[in-house]
Amino acid sequence: MIANIQALRAIAALLVVFYHLQAPLERYIGAGMHTSFGASGVDIFFVISGFIMFYTNRDYARSSAQFLKDRVIRIVPLYWMGTFLILAILATGRSPDGVRAVDLGDLLTSLFFIPDVRADGYESPVLTLGWTLIYEMFFYGVFASFFFLRNSVRILLALSTSFLLLIGLGLALTPSSFSLRYFTNPIMLEFLMGGLIAIRYAQLPPQGKPAGQGVWWAGIVLGALAIVATEWLTMRFLEKGSLLRPVLFGLPAALIVWSALMLERSGAAWRSGWIQLFGAASYALYLFHPVIIQTCTIAFGHVLRKTLPSLSTAHGLITWGLAGVSATISICVALAVAILIYRHVETPVTRWLKRVSA
Image: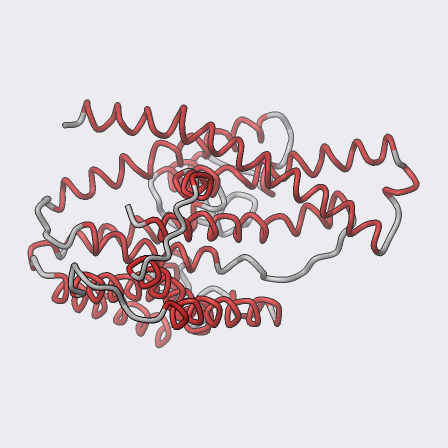
């Protein structure tokens, strides 16, 4: 376990939580927020995913089938649980995470990671955040298909050729099919960035520390500033299929990941028990936070209107203060629930599935 990578997973998940908090805070509390701040958590996740897959499989001792089985055990159970939770809430007449209509085709394509346009017209799986898992599973599949090469450099070159060919075809042909457009998105380049980092990191000597922690702290700060500046400027960098996203979000994310790795080698590792726990629970937090924060902000707004009707219609600093309280409560509840899911659902289910499939 690389402590700083685990810490980055926690930070990336919290960034995504904040990004998704903006809409419910505006709708239920009245705090207008229209930024893309926090969206880069996905890009950090993609770079980390590319790094972890290449780094942990660098000896290619497992077969591609074993690798894919482990990935399915890791990803699918919690994702399916989240998907059926959305359906259960939708059946009560509510709109969880903005989902308004789902048909059987939507359910099947969601469960099996197939890009689809939902019955309500939204280009997303039933569990909205599953759009990133479709890319993850696609990456795993292509990665595993090149295991026969038995060399990380050759596999990275093969992956790069495949992804660049797909992206190039997408840019040249602009396919009308949503599924075809999906797998020509330049965001897939971020997995390659993580793979390149893993190959270089594995080449470093096992002994010795890189000199000067200041350089790596500067790398993290520079990467963070680059992302923050971009996120606060405009939402257009998030347009699907845009080459700007892997450049403006992906490259700074890669710089942050590399700098965090070098910091740990130089002795600066974030081993706090809480941050490591948050990192371990980051997958559960990522999948379930939209429903949790929506529920929390609705409840907070309802209590506010009942107990402080004059303040609930206020503006300015009071509204922002109330939004801050609501956001803090929502994040804390989301973290608490994610930890419970990680400890009492994700971990035992994963262990059981590994045991019965061995």
